[in-house]
Image (cartoon, rainbow, N blue to C red; front, side):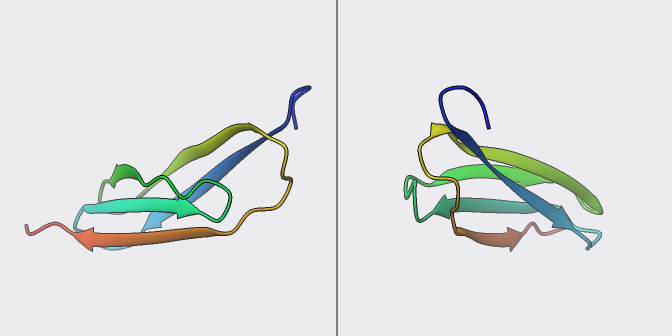
Length: 67
């Protein structure tokens, strides 16, 4: 938490060898955000800065890239 609200951070882990393109939305911020994840790596995306809501539910949809 920060003085003006909560940051909503979604962590994504790709355990496959292929990279993935992901789209992230949440119940608090339904605006889609895109993020690329390299194979066998992790990334995170901040979906909301300074939210008044402490709790959120993420929805992540990923598509693997062809090698």
